[in-house]
Amino acid sequence: MNNLLSPVTQLWARLRLNEIGPLLSLAACGFFAWAFISLADEVVEGETHALDSAILLSLRDPQDLANPLGPSWLEEAARDFTGLGGYAILTLLTSAAVIYLLMAGKRSAALLVLVSIVGGALLSTGLKMGFERPRPDLVPHAARVYTASFPSGHAMLSAITYLTLGALLARVEKSRRISAFIMSLAIITTLMVGVSRVYLGVHWPSDVLAGWSVGAAWASLCWFVALQLQRRGQVEKPGETSTPPVDAEPP
Image (cartoon, rainbow, N blue to C red):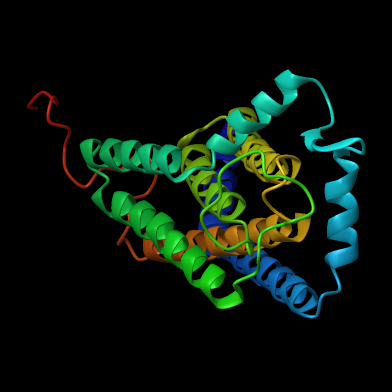
């Protein structure tokens, strides 16, 4: 029985790498790109303003709009969560991941991660400059802001960074349960960062939805490219290294 399962397992793994994985990643890229374009069109036409305003006001004390609903610790927790999508934290995580991949001999994978996240940051900046949507002015901001509002850079870059790194870690993990846990953690972190931006009053809800959409689209596109390069042997497969570890013993 085991002898029969082994070829089937190998065939499924090969099929997942060569056919299903690229197809799903490309489909996800198309879906999220369509979601962003549709949402951006509604934002430009002002169709989201009423709902955006209602959600923002619903999260504030009607007697004091400077005070978000909930206990004081919740506001402080929101600031902690929003920090996970800040440039400093994401730069630290990206640098650590790239250095680790280089030390593990996965130079192509390290370059791919770096290009994916830096490219996403440039895309975020370009989109903000293109739309130039003002920040919400209905409620006082509970965190400092320096750039335009649409799309949310925190939501977009956290989606790109956490989903890219999560997918990378999940792929090298043999256990499906652990892989699912890693991806779930990446998704939950991305969602919490975006929600915190709305709760703190520094983004319209549509900004965050747009950031999630374009971030997921970019991450899916990068993963599609990674699978194509991996199939051609230009990016190391899980478990492979381009050079032997420095501390490896000679045969």
